[in-house]
Amino acid sequence: MTTESTARPSDGSVRTPSVPGEYQLPVHFGVVVLCTITLPLVLWFIYPKAPQNGWGWDLLMGTGMLGAGMMLALPLVAPRVWVYYGGDAQALRSLLNLHRDVNYAVLVLVLIHIVGLVVIDRTTIEYLKLSAPLSMLAATVASLLLLVITLTSRYRTALRLRYPSWHAWHVGMSVLAMTFMAFHIVDAGYYVNSPVKKAVFIVLVAGPSLVTFGLSRWHRKFGSATWRGLDSRSQPVLQLPATRGFSVRLVVLLGVFWLLWMICFSIPDGGSRGDAQVTLCRASECE
Amino acid sequence: MRIVLVITLIAISVIGYRATMIRNAALLPVAFEHLDHSDEACITCHHNYIDDTGYDSCYSCHKHDPTVALEIESMFHDFCRTCHIEKAQLGEASGPLRVCAECHHEGGRRSQNLN
Image 1 (cartoon, rainbow over the protein chains, first blue to last red):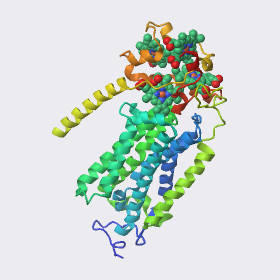
Image 2 (image 1 turned 60 degrees about the vertical axis):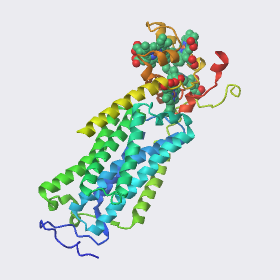
Image 3 (image 1 turned 45 degrees about the vertical axis):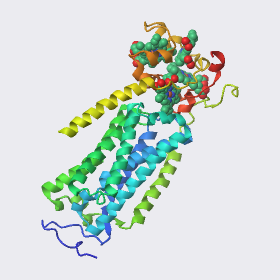
Image 4 (image 1 turned 90 degrees about the horizontal axis):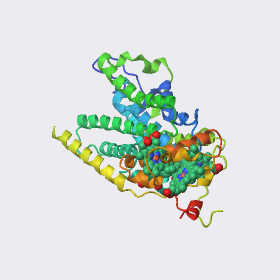
């Protein structure tokens, strides 16, 4: 173990002491992250609630929404910013793991969202073409950006990308991807279906990125010790272990929570489709 | 800035190509039934009966009239689904809201009546 965790940075500020190999996250910050992840799903079931489209369709929409929420939480767990607010190099690894694993979870969820829809309804292939409406094209672009971001980050050294330019592109592409994702959801307008919900959603998209941006500016201006909010001595903290397994488990736990959430709150709507239920049949078989 | 120029050129050609793709896209089958819509007045949908847009079937006119050809998808989707969603939110019987195959499939009574 290094002694970095107790060393003082040259600017004389006091870093949050942390156990080597663990990252201390203030509890209220953990709550903010969890809220960011679940809020798109909350928007789904508040008034005016979107009518149901059948379990298969709704669950696939739910994977999209969870993916969106997790994507929004990514800038909050950006190690680059939190390096200023405590934690040694070793401890920050746990945050990096979280950032990575949440991103992989987003990729998987988006993949399920796309492939699943094509599987249960072949017509959706139309929306993967260039002739698709703009809201759907935006989603395709966002997914491709997500893939590029993941690959350039995972293989940054192999691709010989210098850190500063990689970082600038990383931030730029992430902001673009989130903008396209937000446009996809707001313009499709089925679950985020009222002006109020749209406004809330846009704030939700911009919020976490602005917080992260603000923190990095704050650090540049005032130094790291000035932001008392994250001083672990004054409040309860969450200990994040640095192992890979931890964040994988966290993500899996979130998935289970999501499924329960969908089943309990987001999907049921008292059967407002009335008696107009689908009967998929050929003319000859229909009666 | 050569890269800006290149990106602009690519963007322009993609936009142009997209427009031709939309124009050339095949009409998808729609299983629309007048029987399901007998509560509505004809002109709710057949706006061309009273405005001067002309006489043709909805889809073929909207597909070929250059003023609306690029918006066929959004116009019909907004039109058909908005009414269905409003009915569904009132708890009344409604048509398809999102699931594509509920509208976009061959067959149904229409093909027996009209074809």
